[in-house]
Structures are given as C-alpha cells and as structure tokens.
Length: 101
Image 1 (spheres, rainbow, N blue to C red):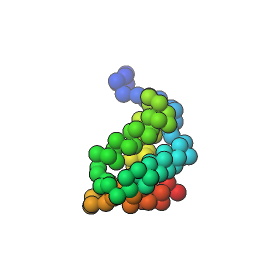
Image 2 (cartoon, rainbow, N blue to C red):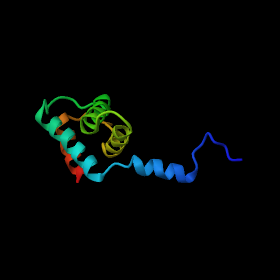
Image 3 (tube, helix red, strand yellow):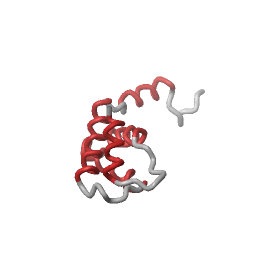
Image 4 (spheres, rainbow, N blue to C red):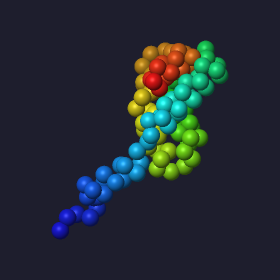
C-alpha cells in the first residue's frame, strides 16, 4: 500500500496546476514594484529585506491572502535579482522593468 502522507503524482500535478500563476500577473506585479521604487525615494538604498517585503506586499495586494499569493510571491521573487552590491531603489526599479518584459 502506498504511503498516504505524500500526494500521488496526479494529485501533485493538479495542485501545481491549481496554484499556477498567470504570466501577466507576475509581469504586472513586477512593474508595480518597479514603479514604486522609481517614484518613491529613488535615491534611497535598496536592500535584500526590502526586496522580499515588496514581493510579499505587492503579491498580497494583487491576490489577497492564500495559496495564489504564495505562488505569485515565489514567481516574483524568482525574477527579482538578489541584492549583492550597493544599489539605489531607482536603479533596481529599472532592472525590474527589464525583468518584467
């Protein structure tokens, strides 16, 4: 008898399909974050915690609370480059504009 703690392949496929995020939603969320960064304090420093917080905040604004939000946040974070050097919010916003395309 198979272990019931783990979903079957078919169940897992259905779960992933149900939580798939439309590409347009990811693009729209990235553009909203980019606009925020270039419009509000563009000369301020961009840091890694802010990157993660913006992805969560804008995902929740787009989908509300739930699995859709988590999937959108993961998809957005996957396209947002990590902060590895000193960079301004405005510069990072321009990078996100390119990533959204």
